[in-house]
Every structure is written in structure tokens, then in C-alpha cells.
Amino acid sequence: MIETKGVLFDLDGTLIDSRQAIIEAYRRTFEQEIGRPLPAPLEDASNLMAPRPPELFAEWAPGDGDPLELERAYGAHYESGAYRFCITYPGLRQMLVTLKGRGIVVGIVTNKRRSRVDADFEFLGLSESDFATVVTADDSVERKPHPRPVEIGLDRAGLDPVSSWYVGDGPHDVEAGFAAGTRTIGAGYGYYGAERLRVVSPTTIARSLTDILAAV
Image (cartoon, rainbow, N blue to C red; front, top):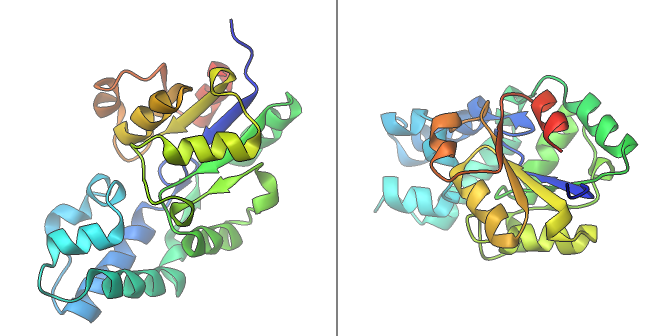
């Protein structure tokens, strides 16, 4: 068995449940900036996570404004209060303490913008110092399922992919981890669910943060 040296995590749907925060920020943007309700399919958080906001606005609000300007409005709505809908998944802090106690390096690789991660951390009582690295959408042009964000995380944390895991709740997370050379854990308790994760065959699927500790 290969000894685990590091675990990199996705953020939304993996360490924190920001489902309602993200939906609320998009809802405010559609209602206040575009002038119509949030499209019904976007009430499903799994449809909101993979695309970056400019891509989502280009698809769901074509002709309703510059997607980059709408992203800025979305970010402002998120950071001005929608983040208060975030909660941590049960056992998060104990899991981090346990992993570090085992000498395992812990980091985050997310498609989320740095400013929104900062808002989440401050509200939830998390700190960047809790992690060896925090890679955000501001660090890479590519996004998951491209392996580059995970590769950046491995490099910054000084980790070898062979002795590392990448944990995420979406198929794109599993694909990114495998492409970067890590073993992968599908967070089946997150936004996409175990059935959608099984399609991309992660190394294992976790039902909770406790399962992640057992797997690594």
C-alpha cells in the first residue's frame, strides 16, 4: 500500500456546503441585474458548479449584459451577504486535525474565486494557515476537469501525486485528480451524488468526512 503524504480537497460540496449561498448570489444577480428570476434548472446546485460564472451567464443570459460584468455583480452579491448561507460539513475541523496529526499535508484546489473563498473562510472561522496551499480560480486559466489546478496544488504543497489524493464531489474533480496522477475520492455526500461519481470511477467514494479519514 502506498503511504499517503498529502490530501488536496475541492471546497464547495466537499468541505463546505455553500449550495444555498451560491444559489442566492445567482438569484440576486438575475433579479437585480438582469431583471428576471433565476432559471429553474439553476436551482439545482450541480448545474452551477462546473462552469465559471461568465460562462454560466453567457449560456443562461445571452444578450442580457457583459458576462464579465455580471460575474462582478455575482461576486458582489456573494461577498455582501450570500456567503452567510454557508455551513461546514460535520466533522471538518476534527478531520483536519486528525490528518495533520498523521503528518499528512492538506490543501485546497477549487474553481472558486479567491475573494469568495476569503469570504467563506472568515464567516466559517477557517484560515488559510489551516492548509498548505489554497489554489483558486485566480491561479489558473484552466479549470477542473483540466489537471492544471491540481498540479499547481501538488507543486505548491511539495507533494508527489503518487502518494497524494484529490477529493471532490463532482465528476470533473475526479477527472482532474486522475489526470494529475493522484488517487481520487468522490465526495458522495456533496452536490453531484454517488451515482454520478461512479460513472468516472474514483478510487473510492466517501459518504462523509469520516469515510475520507478511513480511506487515506
